[in-house]
Amino acid sequence: MLAAPPRPTQRPLNASAGPSPGLFQAYNNRGLAFEAQRDYDRAIADYDKALRLNSDLADTYSNRAVAYRAKGDFSKAIADYEQAIRLNPEDAELFFNRGIAYAAMRNFEFAITDYSTAIALRAEFAQAYANRGHAYSVIGDHDRALPDLDTAIRLNPGHANSHFLRGRVLWARGSIPEAIADLKTCMRAASDPQLRASAEKALLAIGAR
Image 1: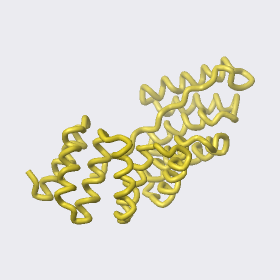
Image 2 (image 1 turned 135 degrees about the vertical axis):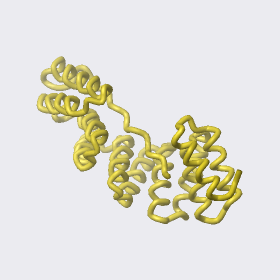
Image 3 (image 1 turned 30 degrees about the vertical axis):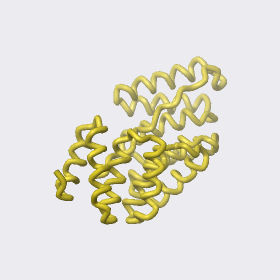
């Protein structure tokens, strides 16, 4: 099992946004509150109202994209990220989050392109390296996956999922002792019981104890 990427973060907004800033922010903030309660339909409805008041803020599109992604509507999430990127093309997080949506649709080539853009915009973006390494591994390109996961771990040594992903790649390449070391590091570092269980299952499959 490959652990899922992190959920994209919601974007705070400037109180002065738009022609009716108070009403605009009220809709956006209520959307964020509904989203925190996992009431995604009502969150999206409020983001729709906010965007009718001001359609020129990337963060509002990004917030709505997070809600669509949580509902599993990845095509609409991607469309909103595209609007956000049009308005703010230098934001690495937007490309990273659109890459997550593409990966969820198993469109790994597009995901890789977006993760690469995120890295170009923010060279120390550890999670973008991890996600790109994951995408490369899924399409069987372990030679490109490994250096990305090496970089992700160098930038964030305690990230359990990066160790899990690299352990799987090393296993596929036949580097068994190194794979075992990464999977054991994952088990020590992981706070997610599902990730720990996946690492333990991989270790058993390798024959390690």
